[in-house]
Amino acid sequence: MGRCVQCRFYYVTWQANTPHGCKAYGFMTAGPPDEKVFEMTSTPCQLRQDKVLPQPNPSQNRRNKFRKKR
Image (cartoon, rainbow, N blue to C red; front, side):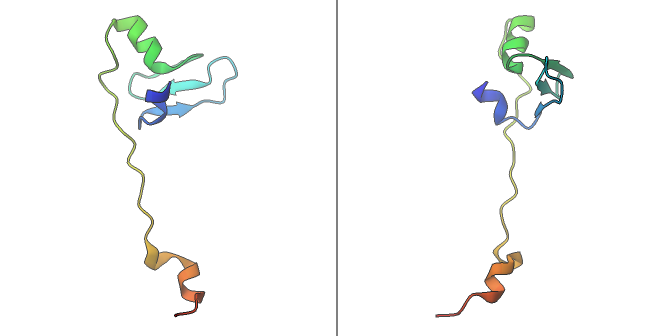
C-alpha cells in the first residue's frame, strides 16, 4: 500500500469494511487499491500519479511578522 498513499487518487473512506478507495478507478476496497487493480488487470496500476503538495509561502506565515530581526 505504500504506493497508493502517495497517489493523488487514493483516499480513506468512512466505511469500516472498505477503508481504502481509488478515485481513478472508482472503487473502495478492504486492502490496498493497487493490489485490487493488479488482481483485476494482472498489471500494475497505470493511472498512479504522485501527489503534488503545496509549498508553504513564507511571506504568508504569521510568525514571520512577529519575529525579532537579528
